[in-house]
Image (cartoon, rainbow, N blue to C red; front, top):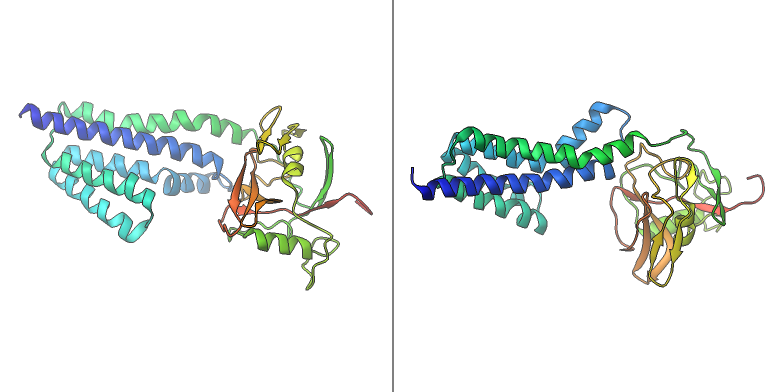
Length: 303
């Protein structure tokens, strides 16, 4: 074997490991940020491997195949590189971070021969899985410690100079994954009936979206208000400690991780808040499955 073929082979293995490691990092963090919301442990694992760790698995399996059968593995890399943007994901990130690397690796594996082969296997397979375990451990620990009282009814949440009634599960606090634009969320909240359980034909203005400051000041973790403060000048929140996807505001077993607020940046943009307290502007026309809302109203009457 020439040094050139060995160099090409180890370059391919190194790139495979690096790329798989990147997807291991992203997938393990995303799993416990927006995933892991089922009651079933097996469903959570299924979601983790089918959605979040699947890019890592693709690069690992193709690398193993290429080390064992270089020409076959090379063709599999190139074929997958062309197939993914055509039949699976048609986005620019998919083209740049999945398809292009697959095609490049296919070319390297075609002529490359990494030796010793056992060390190549270990590098391509063990390192990405170790990265997934290491990067996912903090998120897994956080999710395992979440507090949930199981109450999904309308409830008063007080503290940090804010007292609001937050709508119960229903039209004012949807749990579906269809996504809502800002205009839809604002319209539904404004049309909720007094009990928050149905939507009237006309706008009643009993319920509304929370302002970004109200949302930030209401965030909590482990039953304690996170003492959030909103700076309108920098448009940044600050917390005494990080909030989490826990009751009374959030449902840990819901796919929804972001809510609209009533605070608008301009005619086309409004602020959204994530369960971990992060705030960022979003186009009002945004419609994502993990993006919804929860209506609020001032404390009064029987509440």
